[in-house]
Length: 342
Image (tube, rainbow, N blue to C red; front, side, top):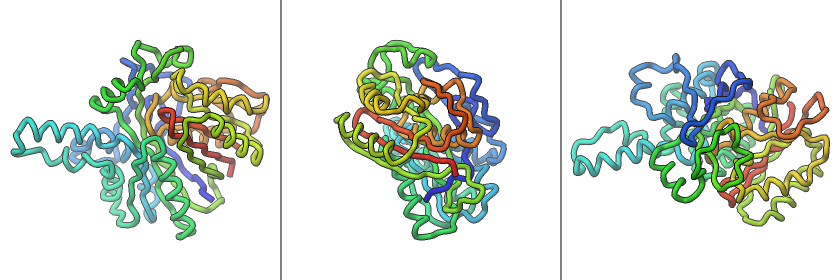
Protein backbone atom coordinates (compact mmCIF):
# COMPACT_ATOMS: atom_id res chain seq x y z
CA UNK A 1 0.00 0.00 0.00
CA UNK A 2 1.28 3.44 -0.95
CA UNK A 3 0.69 6.14 1.65
CA UNK A 4 1.16 9.80 0.70
CA UNK A 5 2.43 11.94 3.58
CA UNK A 6 3.39 15.21 1.88
CA UNK A 7 2.60 16.76 -1.50
CA UNK A 8 3.85 19.89 -3.26
CA UNK A 9 2.93 21.23 -6.67
CA UNK A 10 4.23 23.96 -8.96
CA UNK A 11 1.61 24.61 -11.62
CA UNK A 12 0.03 27.42 -13.67
CA UNK A 13 -2.12 28.15 -10.59
CA UNK A 14 -1.38 29.11 -6.97
CA UNK A 15 -0.68 25.58 -5.75
CA UNK A 16 2.79 25.87 -4.23
CA UNK A 17 3.04 26.25 -0.44
CA UNK A 18 0.06 28.60 0.09
CA UNK A 19 -2.60 26.86 -2.00
CA UNK A 20 -5.39 29.12 -3.26
CA UNK A 21 -8.02 27.61 -5.56
CA UNK A 22 -10.07 30.81 -5.71
CA UNK A 23 -7.95 32.51 -8.38
CA UNK A 24 -7.81 31.25 -11.96
CA UNK A 25 -4.72 32.30 -13.92
CA UNK A 26 -5.59 32.45 -17.59
CA UNK A 27 -3.85 30.89 -20.56
CA UNK A 28 -1.75 32.97 -22.95
CA UNK A 29 -1.61 31.93 -26.61
CA UNK A 30 -3.18 28.56 -25.71
CA UNK A 31 -0.42 27.85 -23.19
CA UNK A 32 -0.77 27.49 -19.43
CA UNK A 33 2.70 28.14 -18.05
CA UNK A 34 3.70 27.50 -14.45
CA UNK A 35 3.81 30.23 -11.83
CA UNK A 36 7.40 29.83 -10.65
CA UNK A 37 8.26 30.57 -7.01
CA UNK A 38 11.39 32.40 -5.83
CA UNK A 39 13.31 29.12 -5.27
CA UNK A 40 14.85 30.53 -2.09
CA UNK A 41 16.37 27.18 -1.09
CA UNK A 42 18.30 26.67 -4.34
CA UNK A 43 21.76 28.29 -4.49
CA UNK A 44 21.72 31.18 -7.00
CA UNK A 45 24.76 29.94 -8.92
CA UNK A 46 23.05 26.56 -9.38
CA UNK A 47 19.62 28.02 -10.16
CA UNK A 48 20.76 30.19 -13.07
CA UNK A 49 22.16 27.14 -14.86
CA UNK A 50 18.98 25.10 -14.49
CA UNK A 51 16.57 24.47 -17.32
CA UNK A 52 12.89 25.06 -16.60
CA UNK A 53 11.93 21.42 -16.01
CA UNK A 54 14.83 20.99 -13.59
CA UNK A 55 13.88 24.20 -11.75
CA UNK A 56 10.25 23.26 -11.21
CA UNK A 57 11.16 19.67 -10.38
CA UNK A 58 13.78 20.59 -7.80
CA UNK A 59 11.64 23.46 -6.51
CA UNK A 60 8.67 21.18 -5.75
CA UNK A 61 10.94 18.52 -4.24
CA UNK A 62 12.97 20.80 -1.95
CA UNK A 63 10.39 21.12 0.88
CA UNK A 64 10.46 17.33 1.15
CA UNK A 65 14.17 16.64 0.79
CA UNK A 66 15.00 19.45 3.22
CA UNK A 67 12.87 17.82 5.90
CA UNK A 68 13.40 14.10 5.20
CA UNK A 69 17.11 13.33 5.18
CA UNK A 70 16.99 9.56 4.70
CA UNK A 71 14.98 9.22 1.48
CA UNK A 72 15.61 5.74 0.10
CA UNK A 73 14.96 6.67 -3.51
CA UNK A 74 13.98 9.35 -6.00
CA UNK A 75 11.43 8.20 -8.59
CA UNK A 76 10.35 10.64 -11.31
CA UNK A 77 7.91 10.29 -14.20
CA UNK A 78 8.24 12.60 -17.22
CA UNK A 79 7.85 12.72 -20.98
CA UNK A 80 8.99 16.16 -22.09
CA UNK A 81 11.43 17.22 -19.36
CA UNK A 82 14.78 18.20 -20.80
CA UNK A 83 13.47 18.72 -24.34
CA UNK A 84 14.03 22.47 -24.30
CA UNK A 85 17.70 21.99 -23.40
CA UNK A 86 17.97 19.12 -25.85
CA UNK A 87 16.72 21.26 -28.74
CA UNK A 88 18.98 24.13 -27.63
CA UNK A 89 22.01 21.84 -27.58
CA UNK A 90 21.25 20.38 -31.01
CA UNK A 91 20.86 23.88 -32.44
CA UNK A 92 24.25 24.81 -31.00
CA UNK A 93 25.80 21.76 -32.66
CA UNK A 94 24.55 23.07 -35.99
CA UNK A 95 25.26 26.77 -35.34
CA UNK A 96 28.84 26.18 -34.13
CA UNK A 97 29.58 23.36 -36.56
CA UNK A 98 30.25 20.93 -33.68
CA UNK A 99 32.74 23.34 -32.15
CA UNK A 100 32.80 24.75 -28.62
CA UNK A 101 29.38 24.12 -27.09
CA UNK A 102 27.70 25.07 -23.81
CA UNK A 103 27.96 22.01 -21.53
CA UNK A 104 24.96 22.98 -19.37
CA UNK A 105 22.45 22.36 -22.17
CA UNK A 106 24.01 18.97 -22.87
CA UNK A 107 23.97 17.93 -19.19
CA UNK A 108 20.30 18.92 -18.79
CA UNK A 109 19.14 17.62 -22.17
CA UNK A 110 18.20 14.18 -20.85
CA UNK A 111 15.00 13.28 -19.01
CA UNK A 112 16.83 12.05 -15.90
CA UNK A 113 18.35 15.49 -15.24
CA UNK A 114 15.59 16.28 -12.71
CA UNK A 115 16.08 13.18 -10.56
CA UNK A 116 19.85 13.54 -10.87
CA UNK A 117 19.83 17.19 -9.77
CA UNK A 118 17.58 16.41 -6.81
CA UNK A 119 19.95 13.61 -5.83
CA UNK A 120 23.04 15.80 -6.11
CA UNK A 121 21.58 18.75 -4.20
CA UNK A 122 20.42 16.48 -1.37
CA UNK A 123 23.57 14.29 -1.46
CA UNK A 124 21.30 11.29 -1.93
CA UNK A 125 23.21 8.30 -3.34
CA UNK A 126 20.38 5.77 -3.19
CA UNK A 127 17.89 4.56 -5.80
CA UNK A 128 17.47 7.20 -8.52
CA UNK A 129 15.37 6.57 -11.62
CA UNK A 130 13.26 8.33 -14.24
CA UNK A 131 10.33 6.76 -16.11
CA UNK A 132 9.66 8.12 -19.60
CA UNK A 133 6.43 6.59 -20.95
CA UNK A 134 4.55 9.52 -22.49
CA UNK A 135 1.10 9.72 -20.91
CA UNK A 136 1.76 6.87 -18.48
CA UNK A 137 5.09 8.10 -17.11
CA UNK A 138 3.75 9.09 -13.68
CA UNK A 139 1.71 5.90 -13.37
CA UNK A 140 4.80 3.79 -14.10
CA UNK A 141 6.71 5.78 -11.50
CA UNK A 142 3.93 4.89 -9.03
CA UNK A 143 4.19 1.22 -9.95
CA UNK A 144 7.94 1.39 -9.35
CA UNK A 145 7.43 3.09 -5.98
CA UNK A 146 4.99 0.36 -4.93
CA UNK A 147 7.50 -2.36 -5.88
CA UNK A 148 10.30 -0.58 -4.03
CA UNK A 149 8.19 -0.40 -0.87
CA UNK A 150 7.30 -4.06 -1.15
CA UNK A 151 11.01 -4.94 -1.20
CA UNK A 152 12.04 -2.22 1.28
CA UNK A 153 9.23 -1.63 3.79
CA UNK A 154 9.43 1.24 6.28
CA UNK A 155 11.43 3.35 3.82
CA UNK A 156 10.59 6.82 2.49
CA UNK A 157 10.60 7.62 -1.23
CA UNK A 158 10.23 10.79 -3.27
CA UNK A 159 7.73 10.31 -6.11
CA UNK A 160 7.11 12.96 -8.75
CA UNK A 161 5.76 13.90 -12.15
CA UNK A 162 7.27 16.76 -14.18
CA UNK A 163 6.74 18.13 -17.68
CA UNK A 164 7.42 21.43 -19.41
CA UNK A 165 6.27 23.33 -22.50
CA UNK A 166 9.20 23.62 -24.89
CA UNK A 167 8.74 25.69 -28.04
CA UNK A 168 9.79 22.92 -30.39
CA UNK A 169 7.70 20.26 -28.66
CA UNK A 170 4.70 22.62 -28.68
CA UNK A 171 5.11 23.19 -32.41
CA UNK A 172 5.31 19.45 -33.10
CA UNK A 173 2.20 18.65 -31.04
CA UNK A 174 0.43 21.61 -32.58
CA UNK A 175 1.13 20.30 -36.08
CA UNK A 176 -0.14 16.89 -34.94
CA UNK A 177 -3.44 18.51 -33.95
CA UNK A 178 -3.25 18.10 -30.18
CA UNK A 179 -3.69 21.81 -29.40
CA UNK A 180 -6.50 24.20 -30.29
CA UNK A 181 -6.13 25.99 -33.61
CA UNK A 182 -8.26 28.91 -32.41
CA UNK A 183 -7.40 30.95 -29.32
CA UNK A 184 -9.44 29.58 -26.40
CA UNK A 185 -9.56 30.83 -22.82
CA UNK A 186 -9.14 28.14 -20.19
CA UNK A 187 -12.34 29.52 -18.65
CA UNK A 188 -14.17 28.29 -21.75
CA UNK A 189 -12.14 25.13 -22.36
CA UNK A 190 -14.97 22.63 -21.81
CA UNK A 191 -17.44 24.60 -23.93
CA UNK A 192 -15.12 24.71 -26.95
CA UNK A 193 -16.53 22.06 -29.26
CA UNK A 194 -13.38 21.52 -31.31
CA UNK A 195 -10.33 19.29 -31.49
CA UNK A 196 -7.22 19.85 -29.43
CA UNK A 197 -6.60 21.28 -25.97
CA UNK A 198 -4.39 23.87 -24.24
CA UNK A 199 -0.71 23.17 -23.68
CA UNK A 200 0.27 22.83 -20.04
CA UNK A 201 3.15 22.05 -17.74
CA UNK A 202 3.81 21.41 -14.07
CA UNK A 203 5.60 19.55 -11.32
CA UNK A 204 4.09 17.60 -8.40
CA UNK A 205 6.14 15.82 -5.74
CA UNK A 206 5.03 13.38 -3.05
CA UNK A 207 6.62 11.84 0.03
CA UNK A 208 5.46 8.23 0.12
CA UNK A 209 5.98 5.18 2.32
CA UNK A 210 3.99 2.22 3.66
CA UNK A 211 3.16 3.78 7.03
CA UNK A 212 -0.48 4.64 7.71
CA UNK A 213 0.22 6.85 10.72
CA UNK A 214 -0.17 10.58 9.93
CA UNK A 215 -0.65 9.87 6.21
CA UNK A 216 -2.65 12.34 4.10
CA UNK A 217 -3.95 9.70 1.66
CA UNK A 218 -3.33 6.23 0.33
CA UNK A 219 -3.11 4.93 -3.23
CA UNK A 220 -5.39 1.88 -3.39
CA UNK A 221 -5.18 0.96 -7.07
CA UNK A 222 -3.41 1.92 -10.30
CA UNK A 223 -4.67 0.60 -13.65
CA UNK A 224 -3.29 1.39 -17.11
CA UNK A 225 -4.61 0.51 -20.55
CA UNK A 226 -3.57 1.04 -24.14
CA UNK A 227 -6.68 1.04 -26.30
CA UNK A 228 -8.97 3.02 -28.60
CA UNK A 229 -12.05 1.05 -27.56
CA UNK A 230 -14.30 2.89 -25.11
CA UNK A 231 -15.97 -0.39 -24.11
CA UNK A 232 -12.69 -1.50 -22.52
CA UNK A 233 -12.63 1.74 -20.56
CA UNK A 234 -16.24 1.20 -19.43
CA UNK A 235 -15.41 -2.32 -18.29
CA UNK A 236 -12.45 -1.12 -16.23
CA UNK A 237 -14.58 1.65 -14.71
CA UNK A 238 -17.30 -0.88 -13.81
CA UNK A 239 -14.79 -3.06 -11.99
CA UNK A 240 -13.38 -0.19 -9.95
CA UNK A 241 -16.70 1.35 -8.93
CA UNK A 242 -18.22 -2.04 -8.08
CA UNK A 243 -15.32 -2.91 -5.77
CA UNK A 244 -15.04 0.53 -4.15
CA UNK A 245 -17.59 3.14 -3.07
CA UNK A 246 -16.51 6.21 -5.04
CA UNK A 247 -17.28 9.67 -3.66
CA UNK A 248 -15.47 11.83 -6.25
CA UNK A 249 -14.61 11.17 -9.89
CA UNK A 250 -11.74 13.30 -11.21
CA UNK A 251 -12.01 13.50 -14.98
CA UNK A 252 -9.06 14.28 -17.21
CA UNK A 253 -11.26 15.74 -19.95
CA UNK A 254 -9.38 18.45 -21.81
CA UNK A 255 -11.80 20.13 -24.22
CA UNK A 256 -10.83 17.89 -27.16
CA UNK A 257 -14.11 16.74 -28.67
CA UNK A 258 -12.43 13.68 -30.21
CA UNK A 259 -11.70 12.25 -26.75
CA UNK A 260 -14.87 13.25 -24.90
CA UNK A 261 -16.55 9.91 -25.67
CA UNK A 262 -14.18 8.13 -23.26
CA UNK A 263 -15.04 10.48 -20.40
CA UNK A 264 -18.76 10.31 -21.18
CA UNK A 265 -18.55 6.51 -21.11
CA UNK A 266 -17.07 6.62 -17.60
CA UNK A 267 -19.49 9.23 -16.29
CA UNK A 268 -22.50 7.26 -17.59
CA UNK A 269 -21.69 4.53 -15.05
CA UNK A 270 -21.45 6.80 -12.01
CA UNK A 271 -24.14 6.99 -9.34
CA UNK A 272 -26.02 10.27 -8.90
CA UNK A 273 -24.38 11.14 -5.58
CA UNK A 274 -20.82 10.98 -6.97
CA UNK A 275 -19.23 14.39 -7.50
CA UNK A 276 -17.50 14.94 -10.85
CA UNK A 277 -14.42 17.13 -10.97
CA UNK A 278 -12.30 18.34 -13.90
CA UNK A 279 -8.93 20.08 -13.68
CA UNK A 280 -7.22 20.67 -17.01
CA UNK A 281 -8.54 24.23 -17.25
CA UNK A 282 -6.11 24.81 -14.36
CA UNK A 283 -2.97 23.05 -15.62
CA UNK A 284 -3.49 22.40 -19.34
CA UNK A 285 -2.69 19.16 -21.14
CA UNK A 286 0.67 17.43 -20.70
CA UNK A 287 1.76 13.79 -20.27
CA UNK A 288 1.98 13.75 -16.45
CA UNK A 289 -1.20 15.66 -15.59
CA UNK A 290 -2.20 12.77 -13.32
CA UNK A 291 0.46 14.01 -10.88
CA UNK A 292 -1.50 17.29 -10.67
CA UNK A 293 -4.74 15.31 -10.30
CA UNK A 294 -3.18 13.29 -7.47
CA UNK A 295 -2.16 16.52 -5.73
CA UNK A 296 -5.74 17.79 -6.11
CA UNK A 297 -7.14 14.51 -4.75
CA UNK A 298 -4.87 14.73 -1.69
CA UNK A 299 -6.02 18.31 -1.10
CA UNK A 300 -9.71 17.28 -1.26
CA UNK A 301 -9.18 14.37 1.13
CA UNK A 302 -7.23 16.47 3.62
CA UNK A 303 -9.65 19.42 3.64
CA UNK A 304 -12.77 17.29 3.05
CA UNK A 305 -14.03 19.87 0.60
CA UNK A 306 -13.98 20.32 -3.18
CA UNK A 307 -12.83 23.68 -4.59
CA UNK A 308 -15.64 25.33 -6.54
CA UNK A 309 -13.29 26.03 -9.42
CA UNK A 310 -13.03 22.31 -10.32
CA UNK A 311 -16.64 21.16 -9.80
CA UNK A 312 -18.42 19.82 -12.88
CA UNK A 313 -21.22 18.09 -10.95
CA UNK A 314 -21.69 18.73 -7.25
CA UNK A 315 -22.86 16.37 -4.51
CA UNK A 316 -24.67 16.68 -1.21
CA UNK A 317 -21.96 14.62 0.49
CA UNK A 318 -19.99 16.38 3.20
CA UNK A 319 -17.26 13.79 3.59
CA UNK A 320 -15.10 12.08 0.98
CA UNK A 321 -13.34 8.76 1.34
CA UNK A 322 -12.57 7.43 -2.15
CA UNK A 323 -11.52 9.42 -5.21
CA UNK A 324 -11.14 7.85 -8.65
CA UNK A 325 -8.95 9.61 -11.22
CA UNK A 326 -9.36 8.74 -14.91
CA UNK A 327 -7.11 10.22 -17.58
CA UNK A 328 -6.74 9.74 -21.30
CA UNK A 329 -3.61 10.87 -23.14
CA UNK A 330 -3.92 11.37 -26.89
CA UNK A 331 -6.69 8.83 -27.26
CA UNK A 332 -4.66 5.67 -26.61
CA UNK A 333 -3.03 5.77 -23.18
CA UNK A 334 -5.52 5.49 -20.32
CA UNK A 335 -5.05 5.32 -16.57
CA UNK A 336 -7.12 4.95 -13.41
CA UNK A 337 -5.78 5.92 -9.97
CA UNK A 338 -7.89 5.21 -6.88
CA UNK A 339 -6.93 7.35 -3.89
CA UNK A 340 -8.54 7.05 -0.48
CA UNK A 341 -8.51 8.73 2.88
CA UNK A 342 -5.74 7.18 4.98
